[in-house]
Image (cartoon, rainbow, N blue to C red; front, side):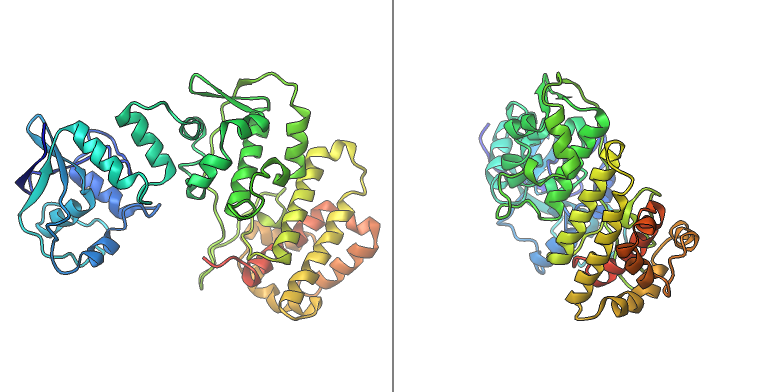
Length: 411
């Protein structure tokens, strides 16, 4: 079928449920797609931005691509514009009531009507290399609509959800230089018949891939930094597991991921939650520099201790306690302050950001504004006190909250 221009009423146009930008159940109605587009948690639709860019009227030089399915005109390309048009003419509602200023839309608009094969080719040409699609969306599209073999990147996500749930991984660099078949195999992972196999336990496999994800989120591994050094930049405990399990046989791995989260920094700081075994009360996202580097080293050291403590001496926690003091000294130096004044200045605000369980832990271990400096000092000199891991974790909770005030990465 050749292409032709046909004027179609906006009320008759049907939004595409399989839009690579954000697919939805194939039986979903237009309003369900509109709702999803306005929720837009990953910023894939940006309807308000589009409406502003369009100006005061609909530009006929940018027309939708439409394919008829059983006399129903499905919009394969141009869904964002049609959503705005449907809202403009009262055919759909903005569920967020954001009052987006929508340009003038005629009721009938010119559309490029063609066969599905032509529509697929046109869409791929327009979006595959322009940046409007990310790597995962592109791989889904070429497999589903162009009959191409599934990429390792796509298979990994189908088996774990690690990429779709963590947008910082959905980029070409990660696909081509991190989650690549040979690199994954070097870490102890393999794919057979679309399934993920591993040489590690499910718990350890999850820990290794999570570590990779965090290193990319923290920009420790980028196109400019530590390029090609994936295993070398993982936590010592994960490196040790990869080396230890090299001779293991591959077995079917079943692991699922959740989205990485960070502390929100605003006037109403989100209460910090933590597990009783978490150093610093959970993961921190700090501005690049010596403090951030030191913080990550301490986390790696702690992870190493947790993994290997059966073969380490009872004195090992003292190293972690002394490291906390050095971390505070480094952070204070960034602020051109002495360590004691730095800790005391931010203590109260940091404590307010902790949840009730964390505050209770501080109280139980006598970590207060008056005692924090002394605890760090005695910990650096008294081996007996510095081996008290529970108190060390309590101290790290308030230090983590302070660092989130003074060194948290700009959002």
